[in-house]
Image (tube, rainbow, N blue to C red; front, side):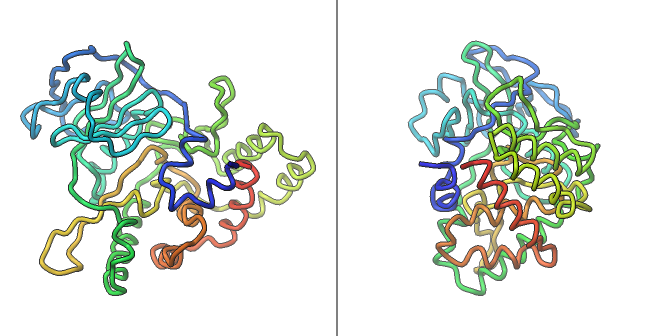
Length: 333
């Protein structure tokens, strides 16, 4: 199966893309004893980038942090893809594996501290030096995904949800960049478009300007053996398309499977929308979230893509979407 085929089925085949092209960039700064794990108090507010390992104050825990043996032996598996596994252990959800990047947990803590955008509580972030796996321990939220609930929602409910999503994204997009196009701490971006599979060949920044960001995409095209003539075409045309897009904080994987829908009131519109999967988050060109959201619509098997436009209005980047889709299909084909 080609990556182009995977993209077409993205929305209906959760995490299939990550099985084929998963980021292997690592930013782990410290190790942690194997078994058991003590609870280490962490001062608030959190300073970014984090000093790892990270643990919340043990007095705030709903239950003692599970040991690595308890995590590894859990049979309540929510997802398993490539070098990443998500399991339930008591009141916790644990995402762990050799391909898990602790930057995802940092992103969640950063968003929770600086916005009202709902994210799962993060209780611990650490890496085990013996099995070379990283662990993100977060709260378990009893809710269904927006993807699973979407077919049963009324038009009125969909309108209320998309309005709320638009408001949450607007708040998220207001977070100022520390230094251009980067992840927290002015570190490289973890976007899969820049993945090479070779730690000595990196194109993922950080970038001071949009021109540098665009140049890296072109370098990736050449690195992936794209047509030299098409590369020259992109070199001549992309600067006129991708310009004047400031760095905007971006979730990076905005789609229904990454949004939990939880009822919090007596009416059908009293819901919380909790955002999941923050591994790709950072400051990208302003058009990036819209482009990725439409790309995740896959084969457009239902009307979700039409509602995406409502969520992002008036910030629709239609021209950029067409060009990015063409470029990405070539990069991943």
